[in-house]
Length: 215
Image (cartoon, rainbow, N blue to C red; front, side, top):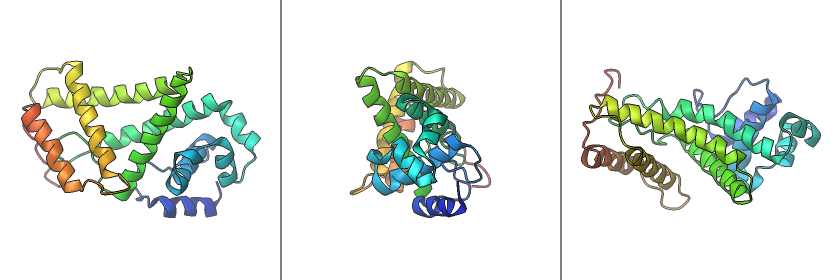
């Protein structure tokens, strides 16, 4: 990816230097494609996530992008699989928070939530059309977050929770995250933090996590 494109991506998506949602020094076509998807999504929405649009932004031929990913299924699976590691790095590092649920407080966090939501939507549409491979990639990521939340509940003093308990917490977190990045009347970060803390202490009946001494 050229320096000019890197600058456009970084400026357009307002990425922090340490954001896990953008890999700056990438020399991998698939990682470059994911960086391009982040920019395309923020500038034009989910409809812009196509191999042709990615090729144009990267100043590559469509055949080169096609060769790196194969068919459209391979393209979506590659995007989801690679984004999953960025998503994992984000949701699992909410240090200093009274609950383990990571919320998108910073603009670069909000970018990641929007892109992940759109990739899930694309995978669900593919599954409805009979192609379940992209959704299987999504399920792997959701499984990581379920295990992370289950471990956090156990570490807070409870037994290993039932699947319904973990799924309820993840669904609540998903809803809050989407409300925080809504284009109209987004949920303020402070309100979201209070809501998730209330769920943690009143619904799950768990104590708040001890804050780090450096926070």
